[in-house]
Image 1 (tube, rainbow, N blue to C red):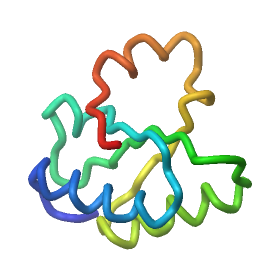
Image 2: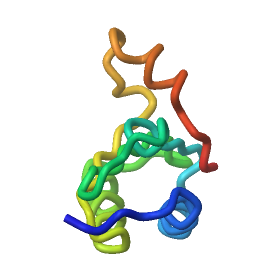
Image 3: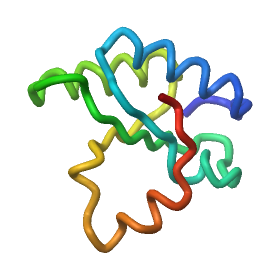
Length: 97
């Protein structure tokens, strides 16, 4: 996996990709949002697209984020967060868009 990345650089890189994929709302969660990421930590991103999108659109976004960040990225929609995790995920969310 990639080397350690500064949170500000990470956010800028993610936002740049999100803007090319018609994302209406987005947030960072997980270790990068909490400030506990280590070298090789994956990046967890919540998104809501503008309008209807397909699973292929979500996969394309994930792939472009991974290519840009050179690390594994998990992309979840706000609606897909498991109800038992929703409160914790939204509490630690760092809004991007």
